[in-house]
Image (cartoon, rainbow, N blue to C red; front, side, top):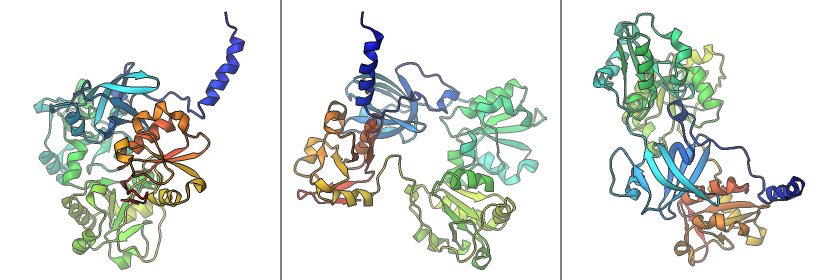
Length: 457
């Protein structure tokens, strides 16, 4: 029998050979999924993220980490709410962020998906639902005149990013702790909403509140997504500070007060906007596809701010909120104030994706002579794409072959990887980052010509 003492040095050497790999077990399920589901061995639950059909591979986001899974188009089974002709079409139909369960097999550290089940819309009896039109009518009246109690069941972090006006936040996972905040009148209309048709939190709250004897509870099934497509939301000064400034999350702040008044005190980064000049603002505003979070401020959270916010919603922007109580509430909360001229044009740069390198940094390094580069340029495109068209001195390994060709990659040097669109490069980043490599990826499109010259979109 071999002595355990003999294994210790061998084990230590093996660990060293793998580099600085994070040994912390990674969650198999997103936190929000654990509210309603358990995840068995060989399964993952999270949000569908990126799809690379050339590989073929897809990426699953589980809170703050990503899982990369290969799949066989011929054998993969995909179950979606709307049936598709084949697995490829079904995967294409999944929106980024859609909740899915993935069953997989694993060999030599590589996960292969065999089943993808997309979350279906929740089932709620029609008598227990309330329409967008009715919610709109009640919110316009207000809780006192409308005789309702509106509850946002989402986690506090989501509520702070913007909510339906007049809503209170009673997260479903903490339902039992917040029972004392429910109306004393068990016949009062209670309306629950969450993140839309596939979210279980408002139906779950409905079941719990009925069990407590409440007889007039309803679910607004379409939830916050439907409201945001039609109306601005609201957020408090404390929420603006916590959800955006404290987390350094990019956003656009529009100050709808007269410019002379706003210059005497405004929230950092504010852009001056005239409610009567929205056409001029929209002509230079960040494009809707960038999905910029927007907060509109006036003196008291009144009609000027609501008018600007509604014009933005009508123009196709969905992350628009009015600051509750306006600038006076911001001041009353003793939050930071600046003075002087406000910006006249809105700019928005999305928060960089985890592990990305800026086009400027990538270009600077790639234009150096290969021997002078402080990083290895790794091209993870397929052979038919790289033939005769690679950056001078770049190393080429198709993304599906990375795990079998690790010996070709340095562990003591930074790696910058790219593909043609950024999708496979991001997949490569997560694979290699999990193995301890010092790696970043180029998130945008890159075109390389036969001379090795390149342009980045």
